Length: 112
Image (cartoon, rainbow, N blue to C red; front, top):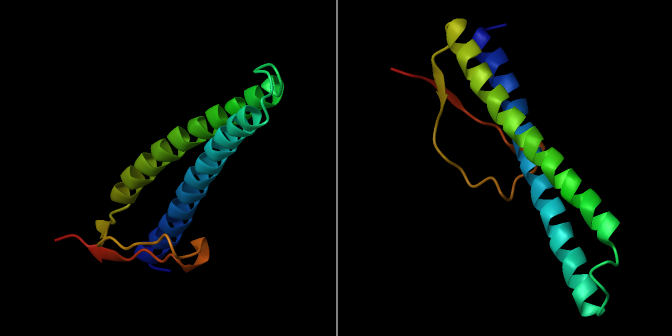
């Protein structure tokens, strides 16, 4: 199999994973905001739900660490791609917000 096609397959999974981590981070952040608003709406003490809120904060922190790790992996894979002689770059921008992860198909072109 040609190197560029193998690299494109890996890149597709990399981008899907990056998007999934970002989506999870956004969902967890929205959960935290909703929990705080619910406590306020019900007129509950700040103590109420504090342990659960702390656990959500821990999850957000873990997701942030995962995001940083994915960015580092992305950079490492880009270096690896160059070491094996692939000089392809992602071409163009596309609004992917309406696509599912399975529908996203990045395209590659050979850099001149």
